[in-house]
Length: 233
Image (cartoon, rainbow, N blue to C red; front, side, top):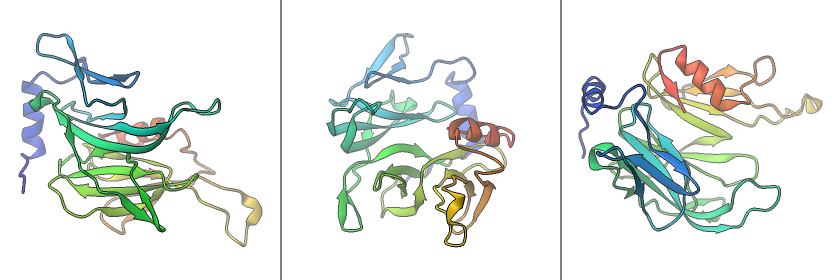
C-alpha cells in the first residue's frame, strides 16, 4: 500500500520544485509527449508507440496518457485514428516522467472484451486513476481503479468527464451524459446534462442541458470548478 503525502505537503513540494504559474508543462504533439528537462531542453517520453489523450495535473506533478497499440486510419469524417487497443500510463515529475503502464486487464461489457482505454486522469489524493472505455457510439463507460492495484470499478456511462483538483469540491467528478427523451415526451429530443458526483450514489445535476448548456464541456468544467477554487480538465 502506497502512502502519499497530504495535499498541503504536496503544494509545498510543487512550489519547491519550481512548478507553478508560468512554468512549462508536458505537451503532446503529433503523437509525441515532451517535457522540460532539468537543463531546460524538451525531453521526449518514449514508449515505442504514438501517444494520445495526455492529461496533466493542475500542479504539473503527474501526467496520464495512452499509447496506441492498434488503430485504424481515420476516415475523411474523423479527426484521428479509430483506436482499437491502447495502454494507459502515468508518469511523475519526481521520477523524470518515466512512464509506468497501468496493466489494465481487458474489460468485459455486454459480452464484448474491450482493450482500449481512453482519457486517463488521476484523483487529487493520488490514490485513484479514472479512464473511459468507448463501448458504444453514443456513450462511454467511465471506470476507476486504485493506483495501488485492485479491481476495476464502474462509475457510470458518460459522454465525457473530468476530476476536480482543489477548492471546495476537490476529488469530485464532473460528467456530461446523454439523456434520451422519455416515453411521455418523445418529441423533446436528446439532451446533454452535466452532473457533479461525490461519494458513491451522490450525484447532483448542475446543468440540465436545456436552460443551461454544458455542451462545451471543457470550458464549462473550467468555469464551474474555478468559481469554487479548483480546476477540472
